[in-house]
Length: 217
Image (cartoon, rainbow, N blue to C red; front, side, top):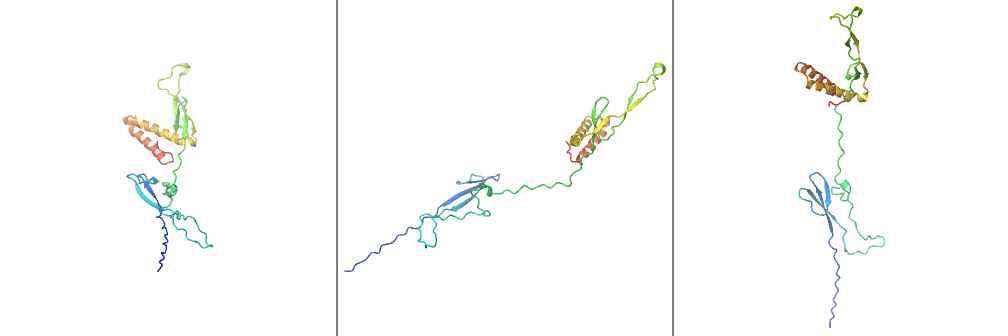
């Protein structure tokens, strides 16, 4: 009798399919980026990225004594320059360029000329561009000889000049702006015969401000 021997079959379990982690990168209309595990909402730009997880269930091969074995194999870390890198670091997803510096339009403008704060004999304060302030003649009361009344055609006056002080540099811009506002108000309510002169004065003061580092109000 012949004997038959059944050779046992060695079944080797095949490695399981590798798992995949799927991420959705969503960019809305405002350029804001969101990373989520579900599909992006309507109206957003969607990009899908898959990252392979370590293979599970694979048979561990017998390694040589001189070669150490590792229990798990991690996927390569994304580099900073990779297109799909930075999933867990939102700051590295879409770096914003630094704001562009606006160059100054030409050289800096010169400062305003001096302006003076004056006060009249009656205590009225006003701004004046030139120093000294313009003189004026104040009438004097006249009497005749022996205390009699002076003739009707007799007149006399005293030349007076108001006291003026230069405005400090810190208040110079606001003083010129106030002088411009006053001129603009006089132009608006000027009589027809004075309209041309009032307009010319307002335009002159506006040009002074425009040629300086003080804005026109």
